[in-house]
Amino acid sequence: MRKPLKQYYKMSKYQHLIDSFMKELELKNSHEPEFIQAVEEVVETVIPFMESNPKYKKAKVLERIVEPERVIQFRVPWISDSGEPQVNRGFRVEFNSAIGPYKGGLRFHPSVNLSILKFLGFEQIFKNSLTTLPMGGGKGGSDFNPKGKSDNEVMKFCQSFMTELSRHIGPNTDVPAGDIGVGGREIGYMFGQYKRLRNEFTGVLTGKGINWGGSLIRPEATGYGVVYFAEKMLNTKKDNLKNKIIAISGSGNVAQFACEKCIQLGAKVVTMSDSKGYIYDSDGIDTEKLSWIMNLKNVDRGRISEYIKKYPNATFHASKAPWNVKVDLALPCATQNELKEEDAKLLVKNKCIAVIEGANMPCSPEAISFFTENKILFSPGKASNAGGVATSGLEMSQNSLRYNWTREEVDEKLHNIMLNIHQQCVAFGKQEDGYIDYVKGANIAGFVKVADAMIDQGIV
Ligand code: NDP
Ligand code: 2IT
Image (cartoon, rainbow, N blue to C red; front, side, top):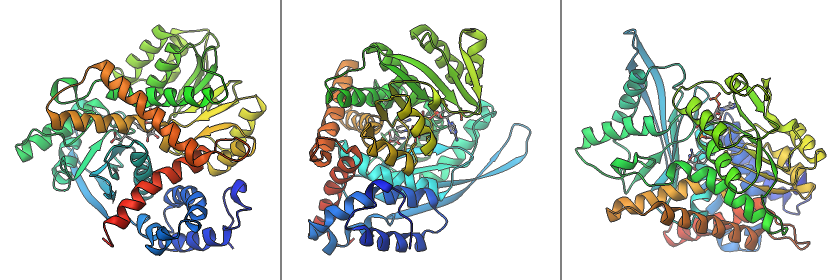
């Protein structure tokens, strides 16, 4: 018998249904551990819900929703500065288009494989549904490593990648954006190549530069949205972010703007990290220090360890994540499974009151179980990091309108979307004792909209 990952749901009277569904899924996708993990997190809450809503069961919505509508895999050949031919693997997982064109980021990282992109594409279906905007779910990327590559090499790679991808995407079909390793520079090179191939200036990608179709606030949106969501969670306990001590992991796009918004709301961020370790600054990372980090990461493409040379009061902890630091809130904003059960135990022991996922699936299932068992405020990424893709949706709207909203207008819409997502989580996730199970709330609210659309559209 399969061992359920989460103790928390182990007692569910529907466990046998969850087990038999997962057994089948594991058989079919046995080499895809991250995908299996992402599906399990959803079905643990959705299967019990479906038992009291039999129309979904009858239409076999769950069996259909875990099967991507289409998976594209392709060769990406390019030539390095030294003149040597190189080859990478490219992917696009077009997971679900029931409520809109496929939408989701592209990840360039050596760890990228089909399992990772299927987990991300699957999560994206529910996340995009929660935003209230008409976007289906997709994800793509490559095992290309942009680290240590020249701008010219990154451009050559992006052009080759887009040469193939351009056959499959379009503003009404599939609209990619950034993710790990894909920021403004990469989106620019890919947009340029798409435009050249198609002779078409169109909103085929989001996260574009502000002078060529991008939306104000898109770079900030994921991180800002995470913090707006955190504030809403604290409000349910009549609390707020002022003077809270916060650990952030990562130092990329999401981490940087989460830190910026925490500072603006009066909190003190004491850690940031990258894949080599974390820095701890007990004085707090202020606006000036953060702008130094942004320059280090976005312009010089340096390592976070360099922070202690500039700010010698801080310390660097090699090969470690920041979860042993005593904080009120933890915002994991780096990558999947970066916060494990032992980290969760340390955080709870140190009286952490809330964990809000900025990254996709950064907490392991055992860590999530531990938080929920201990009634810690916990939000899954598909709810709390949805501000990025939501603002991508706003970029698509502005592109279609051929009109740009102001910074204030976009920020207000983002804020309202995060508020709405929070309300959906409460509506579907509030327990009898008042505890809000954001995992359950986000999964069921995200599922219902997509599942209803799938039923309306027949067996396709
Ligand atoms: P970036 O590439 O800008 O930054 C990624 C950060 O995470 C870097 O600090 C990186 O360190 C660190 N990191 C990456 N892989 C690992 C690893 N294996 N172990 C430890 N640290 C790691 O990416 P984003 O900030 O855009 O993305 C971060 C997370 O947020 C991802 O999970 C992504 O899917 C998610 N997300 C992103 C959105 C967006 O709009 N960008 C929207 C919603 C979610 P290093 O430089 O050393 O690799
Ligand atoms: O995980 C995500 O939601 C993203 N990387 C953003 C996707 C998007 O289309 O903006």
